[in-house]
Image (cartoon, rainbow, N blue to C red; front, side, top):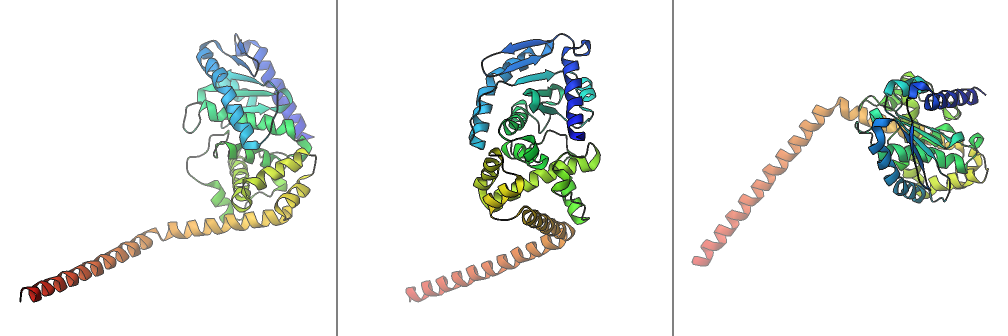
Length: 304
């Protein structure tokens, strides 16, 4: 219930911004596949969206092996403060509202590494596609977000804290959020908010690495047939949802411990590596000297 109330509130505020005076004069470009709404200064960006959208959609449908036909509305907002008032979070760069086939983009954050307009649109369009095929009650939030990061090469819709891995810290301190804890909604702010995104990406990446892309697509197929998540995972991966979570947690912990060991002993490892190279070089030089000596002796013998 709280999730529905939150989503309804976001929709209300976004629509109010789109038609209210705070948004300013709104312009629209339309073709048979997409509607693009934008502020005055963003006409070139809107035309770019219109041009790139068919390729983005075709690429996404190929990734998901789906076919759908709906026309979303993409709204480009020039003012970050306006977008932030609607979303209520400084870290969010774009938002998809499946109930309205609506994508709202904070254009001020586009082309700020690692965000680009194309990858952001593909990420948000992925959310719309998932909800067109799968009922909200059967699509956990972590899978929804994880799939959308997978199809965009790991790009989330939030500004992260550089290369600092919150996931590794959570694994080391035994603070990973459970699958169940990420099923309906994410924490709204703070480090747990970012952790939810990192976990979602990590879970789907683990499924892909252990069971292949076909395993990921199979889960989506069963969910689209109105199976629940437990059945979809069991049929697709031949393991229970609890077992999948246990294996994923173990994988994250093992990788984190190995990474931490390397980080803590980096100088010793580099010193050992340099020593091994030196030893290898010494024996290689020794062998070459021996070969030269043997060649000289053979040459002397030939002269005699």
